[in-house]
Every structure is written in C-alpha cells, then in structure tokens.
Length: 225
Image (cartoon, rainbow, N blue to C red; front, side, top):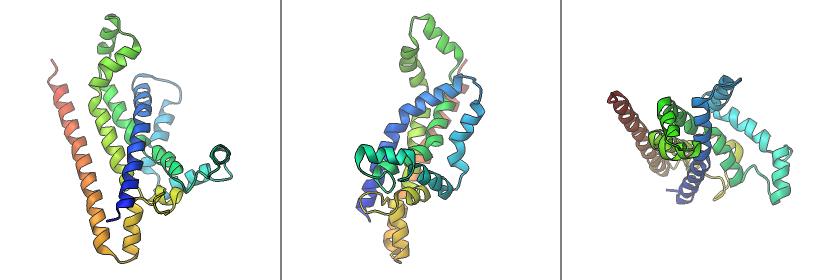
C-alpha cells in the first residue's frame, strides 16, 4: 500500500470538496430557479467532463495552465512556481473536472423545493440569505451530501486528467490512481490489487450513500399531502 499516494489523494479530495461545495450551492441554486439567455449552454459546459475523454480534458487544462498561458504566467509571477505539475494545479484541475458531480445533485435538490416554500419564508419576514440558510439548505441537504460523496469518490479515482496536469511526482502529484498504474507496470499485482480494493470500497460506499439518499428523498416527496 502506497500510503503517501493515498494521503495525497485524500488531501486532494478533501480540498476539492471544500472549494466546490459553496460554488455548487450558488450555481446549482441559480440554475434551478433562474431562466436566462444561454442557460442551456452553461448547463452543457458544466456537464462536459461527464462525456469528454479525460485525456482531452486534461490536454486543454494543460494548455490553459501551462507556463505560456496567461493563468500560468500570472501564477508564476505571484508564487515563483509553475502551476502545472504541482499540487495547486492538480487541485484546480480537480475542481474543474468535478463540476458536474457537485453542481448537478444540488441543482436537482433545489428544483425539488416548491416555490411556495420560499414565498412563505419571505412572507414571514426572512431575507433571501436567511431563507437560503434556514429553509433551502436543510431541504436540499440530501443533494449536498450526494454532491460531496460523488466528488470525493470521483477525485480519488481520477487518472487521465491527473496524469496530464500533475504528472507523477512523489508526494506532490502522485495520487493513488497513478500509484496503482505504476505498480501494475512493475508487475506488483499484490499492491495494485490492495489499492484497487480500497478505491472500490470508497466508490461502493459513496454510490450506496447517494442511492440511499435518493430513495429517502423520493419517499419524502411521495408522503407529502
């Protein structure tokens, strides 16, 4: 078991969830309740990581964050380091390729909240911010948990984008998925099998949690008068 790679993967998944959750709440709520020109295009752009091959997405991220890109040059001027092949670059890439896994569950959760519920909160004197915090988020909690579970599991298992953007640098960008690949290349099937089993367990538990929450949400909707 490559504990260093596992720790790095857990760290990457943790910070990805921390960054994405507030962003997903804002964007998911906006998409659920607002109609605006270009909304379908925005939703399609968010969903792109679901259908693009990871190497294609990784290639464009590599170009967008490379040393000759505007973002890469700005980051280098600010920190003195390159964005690609670093943990910071890997984290930025992780946030981007996890957008649909975080935003879509929350969008569906907000869409399930009746408009009358929000209007009743406003009539009681609650501000939009108070309504979000005290009414909407408690009702959308299952979507938030699903978003966190899917984002965490997907980050642990991502390979193509991680390899393209982060490379294979020990204790910096070498995640457990990259370590599994290295062990297979070295014919160390025992270690590769052990780490694969860990990822399988994480994924199974995460997906099971999502389905369980979906079932509870459906039962709650069906029990409404």
